[in-house]
Length: 194
Image (tube, rainbow, N blue to C red):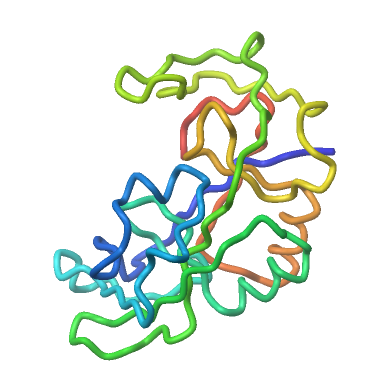
C-alpha cells in the first residue's frame, strides 16, 4: 500500500486567518483530540482582508492555521471512504464583505494518530519547543507495518501536523475532481512543498 503526504495548496484562494469566535485554542486542532464539545455552534470564518483579491473557494480551503477546512462535497467523499476517526466541526465561510459564500464547510479534525514514521530510517530534527514531535523532515521513511489496515487518512504520532492519505483515498479524491490540495509520495519525501 502506498501513502501520500497531503497538503492544502490552492491558487488565489480566499485565505482564512482566524478560527470562529469561541473556538478552542489553535494548537488543540493538531493534537488528534476531540474538540466537538468546545467548538461553537454556527461558527463562521471569513476571507482575510489582507488578501482582498483572493476569492476562490476550494474543496480544501487554505488557512493560516494549517487545519483541514473541507467542503460539503469533500466531506461526503471522505465519509463514503470509511474514514471513521473523523470529527466534523461545521462552519460557514464568508467573503470580504461578510456574505456567506461557503455555507457547507467544516473543519476536519482527525482523531488519534498512527506510528507511521520509521524513526530509525527517517532523517529529521526534533522540535525544540514541542517535545516528542518532529520539527523538520529531510527524508521521510514509513513503517507501514505500524499503520492500522483501516487507517486511510491520518495524523502521524511523532508529527501530528503531518497528514497522510492512502493511495485509494488519493485516487478517489482525483476521480471526484476535488480541489485545493497537493500530494507527495510519502516514502522519501524531503519535507518541501513545491
